[in-house]
Every structure is written in structure tokens, then in C-alpha cells.
Length: 37
Image 1 (cartoon, rainbow, N blue to C red):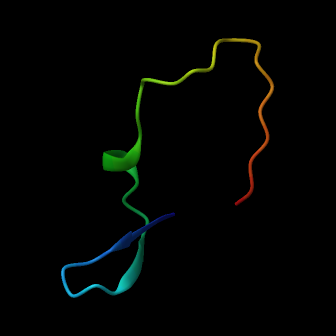
Image 2: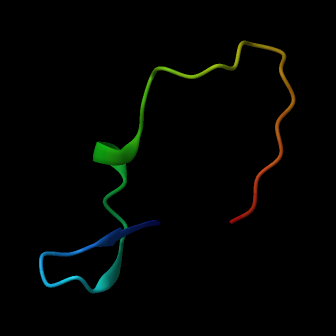
């Protein structure tokens, strides 16, 4: 799930998250991270 603001300034959610993913991160294998969904 990704949130974005559409062309008419409304807050929207989408299941199409691929465009929001990135291969550039400050994390390396073995790092522990926390997150909230």
C-alpha cells in the first residue's frame, strides 16, 4: 500500500507500489530495522 496526493490534491492509496520502491538504501545485509504498517 502506498499513499500519494493525486492531481486534484486528494490523498489516495494504491496497491501498485513498484514505482515507489528503490534499490538505493543505507541498509546492508544483517542490519535490523523497525517499521510500522
